[in-house]
Image 1 (cartoon, one colour):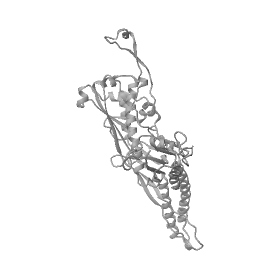
Image 2 (cartoon, rainbow, N blue to C red):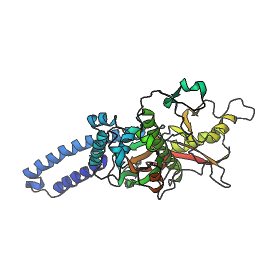
Image 3 (spheres, rainbow, N blue to C red):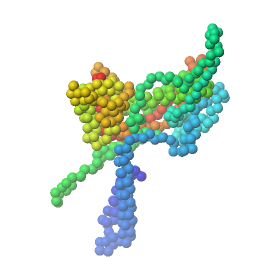
Image 4 (spheres, rainbow, N blue to C red):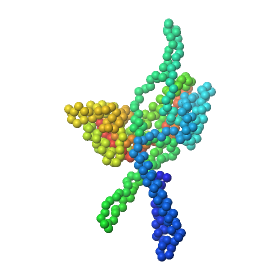
Amino acid sequence: MNARDLLERRAVIVAEMRGITEKPAGAGGDLSAEQSAKFDSLKGELEGIEKRIDRQRLIDEAERRMAGQQIAGSGDSRLDDELRTFSLRRAICSMVPDLAAQVDSGRERELSAELARRAGRPFQGVAVPMSVFHRPIEKRTITSAQASPDAGGSNIVGTDHRGDLYIDALRARLVVRRLGARVLSGLMGNVDIPKLSASATSGWVAEDSALTSVDPTFAKVQLTPKNAGALAEFSRNVLLQSSPDVEQLLRSDFAAILANALDVAAINGSGGTDPTGILNTSSVDTSTVAAPLTWAKVLQLIELVENANAEGNGWVTTPGVVRLLRSTAKVTSTDSVMIMQERDSLAGYPLQATQNVPRTLGSPATDHALIFGNWADLLIGFWSELDVLVNPYETTAYSKGNVKIRAMMTCDIAVRHAESFAACVDVTP
């Protein structure tokens, strides 16, 4: 039982005990033997419930304050061991008719079927575990001789194919999970998380005076499935290659594209078809602190969070704002100490800089954002493992012997406490 269930059970027990005492059936207005036994039984259960409520509140409070951790694994160690050997390349080949006979992908088909069974829903293509994008991959060097009609002496010189030095595209730095966003996996239906929005209050009263009744109020944080995807075309030769570096290319490309989309949405998602990010979450304070940035305003952002009884654990901003912070004097214009002295740290808290933070805010759309908060209060919920669908018959790809590959991710993002974040959204570096 969670704290809410325990509180509801306590209320039921107390009401039942009150009902017994208000209608005594024994002699002289006392309880009957049956009522006494029932009352004592309820009393024992009430004491047990009270202890469980205290324990649950302690756990809930500790969980609220702790740094977020990604929930990894399926809970089945044997399945997790098998998933570590899952090959995205072989899984894709299993869906291309003529390649399926040439590439041994039986393990991937079985694991995909098991993931679909555990998810309780069919996948459009092949179910791919998210862990496939977070594990290291074996590296090796491939050497081949390459001849050219006019190469002369180069005909006997081998060429080193350094797949282990594969040059990926430059991508924005991913930050929200690094700062401790809380990840929920294996979701099924829509998710409603109960939330105490206002608690009862205490107060001092004079003798023979009545307390003022202030009832707690409850709200909920909701997560509903949102879809993100990537579409790419791969050549037949790439899929046939057995090099682990080809496997790395497939994994890193899809992982980077979708992880980047998730980071952008977590910070500034507008809602609707995409999740609602921090800067667009109602009640997140984005107006109290205005540019130009000073040391006092940096401290004010921290104060806004702490005044709401939250504990911030990090900053997120753009490289442009970092340059501004590291070139602006802390107190006076002649001060040799800058607002941001240490790399990746501001006012004693870690700072992550990324191009995924908006840089086109305000008017004329040139302002950047600086966000401070408790990133453990950012929830990322996943409904499915990565869903990969292969289409070898798409018109353009088919004529070249290539295949179109679509990767889909179903997730949502929500903020547990809007007061856990504060931002300045009009910084012009």
